[in-house]
Structure formats: C-alpha cells, structure tokens
Length: 323
Image (cartoon, rainbow, N blue to C red; front, side, top):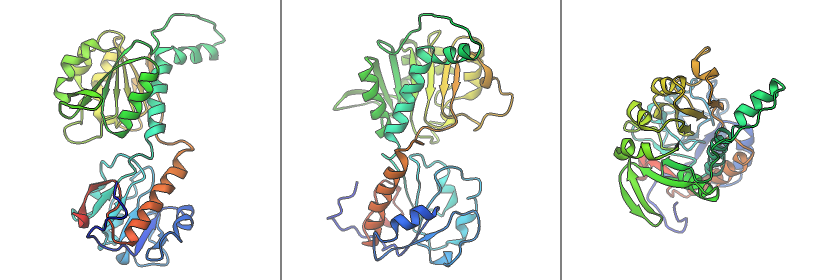
C-alpha cells in the first residue's frame, strides 16, 4: 500500500473510465484533477474520445467482450481490475500499461466461502439437501472440520484469511507457497513439496493465483497422493486444478470436491462433475457478496485520489509508468 504522504514519480491521470453509472457518480467528486467517465466496453464510449483515456476500471466479471476493446485507448496508462486475480488482463493492453488489482476487497468473502464449502462437504450438508428434496431422513456421522489436516495452497491475503478461519474451527493447517520459507507464523512449504505433503492431509484448499507455474499445479500426481476420502476445495482459478484428473478420482469414489471455480468455466452440459456424488459446485461467487460494493468503492476512491496527484496507486502487479 502506498503512503499518500510520499510522492512518487508517475503520471497524473486526468481521465478515468468506470463500467457503471453508479461508480461514475460515486467517484465524480473525489479529485478535481480526474474526470470520471462511463465506459462499459459493450459499445463505443459516448461523450469522450477514448484516445484521451488515461486509466480504465474493468468490469467485475467476464472478459469475452473486452478483447480488442482497449485498442481504442492507445494512451492508456493503467487498468484497474475489480477482482483479486488478473489472469488474462495483460493480454488486453500493451506491455507499458500498469495493472492494479482489487487485492483485499474480496478476502473476507472468499475466505468464508472456502471454509463454507469445506464445512458443507465435511458435515454432509450436500447429502442432507439432496435427501430433503426426496423427503428422506438419514442420519450419519461425517468427518467435520475440527482436527482435519488441511493443506492450504496459497499464502497471500486471502490465504491468510482462510487460515485464520480454519484455526477457529480447530483444524490443523499446513501452508504451501511458491517457495519454501519461514515467516512470523512459522514454516511455509514450497509447491514442489505437494506430492510429499498430500498423503498426510484430509483437505486441500486452493487459493493460489493462476500463473504459468500454477496452471495444473493440483494435478494427477498430487491428487493420486491424497488419501482416500480427501476433499479438494478450489476457490482460486479453475485451471490450477487438473479437471480431468480430478474427475477421474471423484468418479472412482476416492476423492470429494467442492469447487467455486472450474476449467472450463462453466463446465459443459453433461459433464460428469455436475452430478457426481461428493461434489459441490458454486458458480464462481467467491468474492460476490454484499460486502463487495462498499469495499470496491472505498478502494477506487483511494485510487482516484492517488492518481489525481500523480502518486503510485495501490495493488500494482505491473508497474507500467510507475516503475
């Protein structure tokens, strides 16, 4: 996070586009130096020349209609996502354009869904819902989350929020990052240790960003190394988990899965994961709660203030002109 009292050599952003009228109106008076305009990328912008655009806030979800849209803004200096992940965003703009994310905005909501999915599966809530629809009462003992050994793959902001909640439920948490290291909370294992760690864990929760090295990270070897009955929870990006390998393990009755993200997304009609026993699928709703609008607005207000003064914005994952 940038200290607003510290100047940073960077461009003054004078025109910023946002994808909704609500955001435009809420940000209009934040900085007299920044003109906030409306552009949702579904059509050509009205009332301003996109060649004059310095920065753009992308829509919250979906990018199908964004390919080529920003070509009309050749002088763009910054794109701001409304998501924590930014995979694919670099493909929309040139290499000199900065990219900022909404890191922190979705942390609490995504963490509560990760733990909620784990609880729902481990306490048999998915089974109970199916039985309710059949008018059937069937009591059984399920593993629960207390005393489960959880392998948490991802130690960023959302990963830490998940860890804190898991500890509250008295789970044993092993953290995995891109490389082994120690921090104030103890040891972080490297992702190259996953196959060796997997046999000793009952649950894997995935919250690592999708990058080249993490694509397919939870693949055939890691999944095969998990013990029978283990649960895979994915709240990261679908492609971090090998869908084909996971499907084989689930259909064999060896593993269970609780997935907020899948690959491809959505799964095709008739895909076996839709109806497989032991699988819960939610439609990529990790950060999409009523906590989102005020939190994203607070972040964007801070960004507009910084940009209007030529200061470095928060959450830059690619520096662009602020390098």
